[in-house]
Image 1 (cartoon, rainbow, N blue to C red):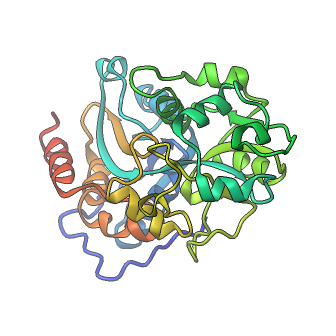
Image 2: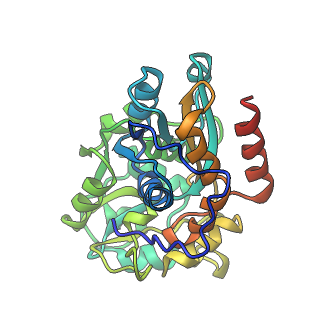
Length: 314
């Protein structure tokens, strides 16, 4: 995806890979995938470690790592209790953001960008309670809302379901899939589908919304601002013009979690060998590359806790 891989001042002291015969195998969520690929490229350039990385979704990564098919699972959510009981061991790596998306030529784009949608309005759209753009924004426009969902084992979709349902009322992926007009396998197919249909709405990780180099809105899709209090967009809620503005809002807590979310790296039992050394580097030197690649780094206290958990294995 062409993310930033500048490695000035990169230090790998104490984290040099052992140069084993086989690559560190990683699979899982497509949300963290671009950042993990950048980290792996940087790490490969300064160690003898090699990587074999694939997506497939968080559920795929968890299944793969528990079955011994990969060394590390990328997760767009925290582990479920039943996964932990099976031996899954996870540490957070960064914060990512999911946002509602529409076509750049949406018939009510001006209203959406100036007023935003509340959580309740998003819920009514994704559950098909409201099916017309004119009804949604109270305009004299008769245009059908076309809802696209996710068909992969998507943590982003789970996070979106948590957001839509509010406190203790989350929607499952199956519930959202069953009412969507179509479901697509991964962020890029969703972005392409929304970008090719003017009346469509869906959700995406922000790295599939903003241009990766300029950080501006240059594609065929646009983010739908979130009106958190039902009073229209205040100046504190107007941060969607560029990726850097959006990330700053996430870091400052002006964009809620969910839809913002921690992402994790996981193993079957404690991390060890080259995989463990790589994760240790991610939680130390690797954090300096997070902002430049469209994510939010962990807070210092959260990062320290992750480092301690990795070191102790508990």
